[in-house]
Image 1 (cartoon, one colour):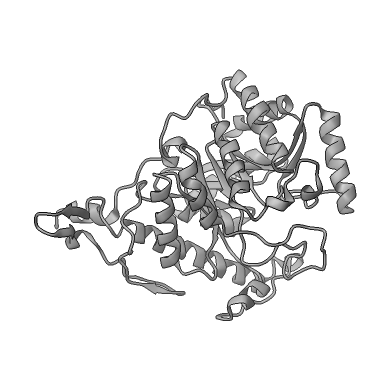
Image 2 (cartoon, helix red, strand yellow):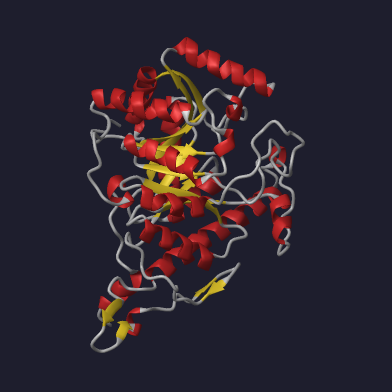
Length: 406
């Protein structure tokens, strides 16, 4: 399928970059990783390229090369700042770019998630999003001590017990998103009246109980935070397999997929649409973004040499769930415009090294895409929903009140 509208472009920010040895690269800023200035500089760099949004990675445990638990390596970046708090810090320092922190659902109360992201939407004046993440880690569960999650062996991921555990985690995540969306809706848009004459700050009739009862929690509501500027901030999710595809289809606005070539990209788009039908999705279709890890430089040889040096420092060739691109901005632009033909809406690029590869994206890739009439030249919308072509949803409670009884 050929798309005529410009593609969307996002970057995924994680520490010093997605390569484990990125912090040892010339130009990296390992001494600044835990400072607000470092993150401000990254996000404002992305904004100078008119990118749609940045995602900020987060987790409930230290980074590790193991699927569950802490490894013994001391030559990788360990530790991170809270993604939602970072986004709130950066929000007033930026004007256009969307801010999408990762917030894990498995051990996090949906009431707290709703207020944090609503607050981010206020702080950014309508540019907040949320990357939903599930924790399948027994080690991370132990950090909270409220529940036990059995170790999930990736090699036995198709065993019935593992499938059941994964299905429950993603089902809980879908319920969390549903509750959060209801809480965002629980204040009608005009609930805050600020009528000094009558002394009424809020119209109590326009606050609503959400009264959600599910397998994992019951939440009455309403929220303590008024309805966010976007109504509902943009919800995103990374999907590799059926359970994640269904979560995205049930709960998200944007899905990140990880094909390794155009044939897999075509299959991933089909899988997303199949999941939408299976979930009975009747709203706007998911926006499909392809994830790519990128090492971009002035020529292919330099990009390859830079990545090879990092591999040597790390002691292993870098591998990722997503495809790894190494080369020039022009070749990357050709790849993106080619893959887009199968129905992809955009790309979320994971810079191999920060800030080097992020700067290359904004200073080389963006102009290369603009020269192909494939990317915007300036921001034309003020909200993240607007950038992505998503409508602002009406509060479900306003709509219900407006529907006459039969």
